[in-house]
Length: 303
Image (cartoon, rainbow, N blue to C red; front, side, top):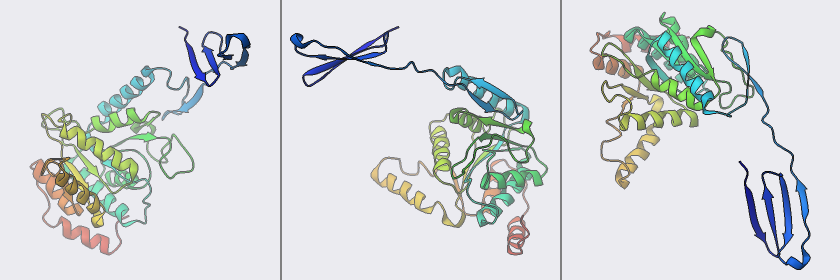
């Protein structure tokens, strides 16, 4: 299929034909009809090599077909089917192991994994994602991840996780496929499934994922039959100004009164989060858990 484009520029107009790949400038006055041709090289897609978890290199024409995205989504679903649904953690890739929120996340990841006895899912990146992974591994529970080759704030890209087995995560080329995976990992297929979304402190990427999940719950695309608990971890009042903004949205009438509050649970600490999940799934919980966390954190024994 070919096409042509004609645009006027003062006393001249140009004509572009996709068949000939030339740009012709023609005087508007037929008495001065001269043609100036600019030749355009034919553009070709450059094949690139993308590495996956199994260290295989696959040639592909990037984004030449929606089938590429479809295949990656199917790979995400296959990984979830193999490892099982569970808790998805959304959080910053920039908070290192010396940050207080890292220590709190590690503790939370360990205790939720033990409480719900399920797979823990993350973006398989550094920062708070890493803390959640290590916490679940300390609990002896399975972990899974949907990695992207380069996280925000990183100078280099890698398709491989530093310590997770290659069959427990997928390195995604497409953000859309990654998001499909993170959402599907919490969809409950039966009453025995124990899943949750845990939003940890984070930046632009985390907020993008948080509000996408929030909108899906609001529109009943998640939890329409079997509700999924959504916890916002407001460590050290990290999200308090965001919550104030959402209150302002109510005052402006852009959201209904109490609408946002009904979609998630705001937790200031790990004890509140665990108590909420235990009540949600009608599970027994240790009465002195909060006291134990305080002692371990105070003595620096969380690692």
